[in-house]
Length: 244
Image (cartoon, rainbow, N blue to C red; front, side):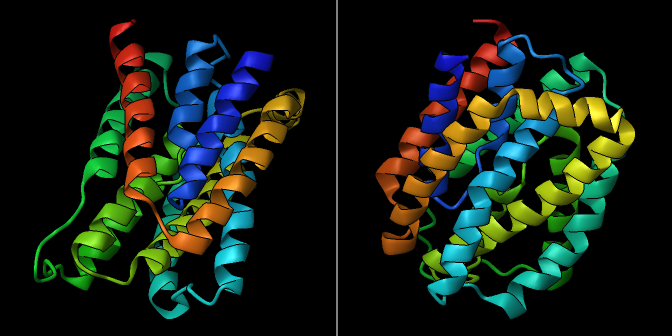
């Protein structure tokens, strides 16, 4: 598990540096590593919670969390994340959903909005997108912030650090609700035991996430880190979908 822990730590560092948790890549690595499909989302969500908990606290202390704007997005996404966690998913469907999500994640990380004016997006549509991302988060074991952040950047919703802070909070709450749904859906004790047995992965993301969060809080998402993370995510997607 040492090699897997190292990959988890690197993933946490890169994702946390851009305000994310890394759940999509954790899920891919676990599936590629042969972990039982029923346990994968719970382990990924637990890692997400560890990474973004510290990030959310640091962003809040830095005074860059736009609470009034962020909370409505959280409020519509969280119940759907819980429902997603309750949804039974076959391995083939989970692998396909995850692979497509990873490809979309890689593209999202590469998007660098350069429009002179913000793209207009109705609040109701943004809330609907947040709800859909919440459901996906619960089903697959991701937080959804990796998809939300590019949209917020595109519409000039807030400055970079505030968007990263919102994505971090979005991931944290979705992961908590999604994990709760996963535990209720499965055998809670057995699933909790499986998460605990993978403690080296939890320790690795704790360290990697702490380092990455410091980078994000101090300077905001760096373009180079976004591109490196996109490469990592894209490689995992290709291997997962096509088997190499």
